[in-house]
Length: 88
Image (cartoon, rainbow, N blue to C red; front, side):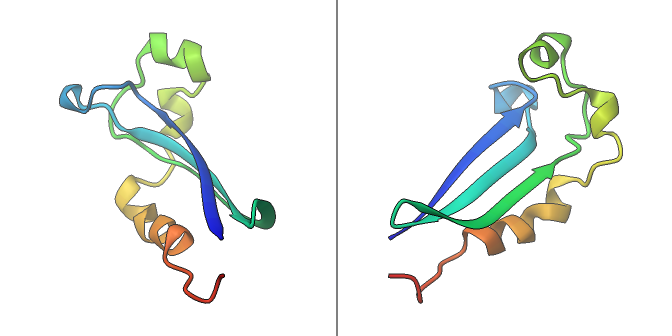
């Protein structure tokens, strides 16, 4: 059985306020055992990270300024989590 465990960080919790992903980290497990395949990307949200949110995860607007935008990493994410039919 294949599982993907992942964690994200965001600019906040409300998409209606324009909040966005700023970090995705993930690892692959086969039969509950890590395979060594990992995914990690910081993402430029194209907006400021509010100070109260920086206090939670420590990721600042300045740090993210030169990171790729989500559309630049989306295919890598899809490829990582994509269907692995050969895995039982």
